[in-house]
Length: 499
Image (cartoon, rainbow, N blue to C red):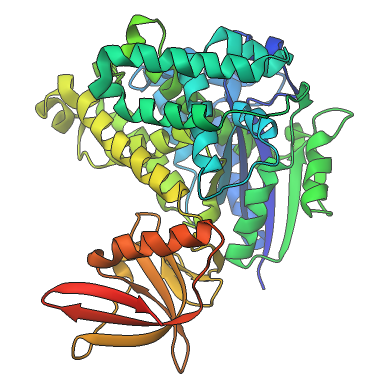
C-alpha cells in the first residue's frame, strides 16, 4: 500500500464571522482550503522542482518566503486577461509544476451559508419543502443583492431577522415584476421561501467551524483508498484551531509546520491563493453593484475574453489541474451553495475549448460574455436539479482514473457516457434493482444485482421522469429499493414497473 504525504493551507480565513468581518473592504464570502499531496517516493522530485521555481523568483519573496500574496487581486480583475507579462510568466511556471504525481483536493465553503444553516437548524426536507433548495436560494439572494438590513441581522443577531427576511423577499417579488420574464424563476423560489419562513430561532455570532474543510478530504481519501498518509498543516499561532479541527474529524496524526520550512505547505498556499483570487474576480464581476443592475442580466465584460495566447494557456493549465489530473468525485468539496465554484469550473471548461486566442476574436469577442452566460446558466441549472436529488451515487473507492465503485460495489464511470446501457431481450428486462440515482450530468442510473456481481447501468432517456419520481419518493422517506423491477420496451418507448 502506497504511503502519501499531504499538506494543507487556506485562503479567506475568518477566525470570527461578524458584521465587522463582512464589511471589511477585502471580504469574500467563500473560504478556500487546498490540500496537495504525493507518494513518499515522489516527494524529493516535487520539492526539487518547486525549490528551483522559487529560486527563479527570489525577488518576489517577503520575509524570506514566496507566498501567494505576490499576486495581487487587481491583477485578476478580468481574470487572466488583466495579468501583466511578468505575472503571466510567474503563474505559467507555477502551474507547469503540476503533473500526475501531485494529488489536489480543494474545498470552497460559503460563510453566509454556514450561518443560514444554523438559523434553520432542525428543519428537514419534507414532502412540502426542499430545505436544501430553500437555503440555497436564500444564500444566493443575500450574496447577489447584498441587502444591508439582512447582513446586519445575520451578523449582529438583531432579533428581527426572520421578519427582515420576509420583508426583503416580499420587496424583491414586487421589484421583479418590472422584468418578470427574466426574474420568473427567481420569483417562484422567493414565493416558496415566504410560504415556509416561520418559527426560526436566531443564533448568536459564532466562530467559524474549521471542521468543514476536512469533511470532503476524509471522503476523498476513502474514495482513493489511501490509508497510509501524513497531514501537515500551516501553523496559525497559539490557538491551533485548524489542527484541532483536523483531529476532531479523525486526522489524529496531523501536525502543524511552519510554512517557511515546508515546501508542501507553500505549494498549497500558492494554489489556494490563485484559486481564491480567480473565484473572487468572477464573483465581483457578476454581482449587482447598483439598484438598476438588479433588474438586468449580468454577464462578464468583453475584457475577460481579450486574451493573449499566453493568458489563454494559463486557463488551459489550470483546467488540467482542477478538472483532469488525478480526477476523483471528492476532488472538490462545497456546501449547498457553490455557484462561484461552478462558475469557475464552467469558465475553465469554456476557455479550454478554444484552440487559440485568435479563435476567440474570430467568434465575435463582443458576444463571448453572452455565450459564456448561456453555458454557465446550464451548469447552474443542472447543479440545482442534482441538489434536489437526495440519492447521489457516492463513491467508496477507486483504483483508476476514470471510474469508482459505489456503495453497492458497482463500477461507476466519471463520464456517464461510458456506462453500459441497460439492454432488453424481446422487449423486456426483469432485474433486481438495488438503487436508482443520477450521474453528475443528470443521467439516470440503476445499480442492479446479477448472479456474478453488481453492475451500474445507464437507463434510457424515457425513464428519466420515472427515476426522478422514485428518487422523489425516497426524499419523502419512501425508498422502494431493493426491489424487483420489470423494464419493458414498446414501440420505441420504455417503461418500468416495480413488483
